[in-house]
Length: 144
Picture 1 (spheres, rainbow, N blue to C red):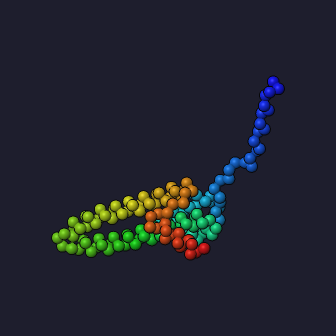
Picture 2: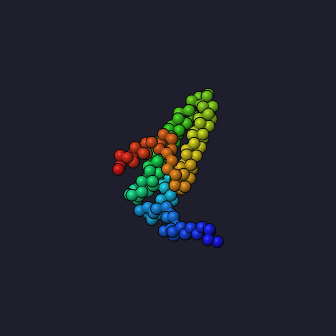
Picture 3: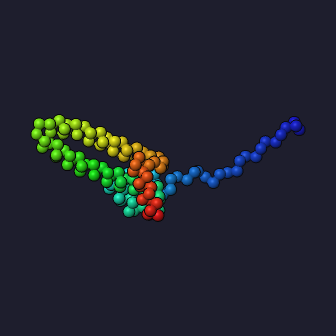
């Protein structure tokens, strides 16, 4: 009995639970604000204006603005090309059909990028949309 080693003391108490996601100047948790800011163009503009301190939210807002602007420019260009193709006699209908398939595929890509960005923002992962993310990062560095 004398040869028994004493039991080690218990670990010191911790300060409490891990802190949750930090709150933004909008009062929302950072991940929720960033996910809402991912709504193309409108959400990005609103959160870019409202959020002054959280660079995570501002980054996703800037990506949203750029993605929304690209989506809008593509939409206008698609309407113009559709209008031009539709007046071509003979092959206009075929061109419009193939153009509609291309437009649908591009819209699906925009939609997937938007959904992935929202999920990444909500899970607090900083994700750069290909081609758009680096532009947004440069804009954020220039705004600082």
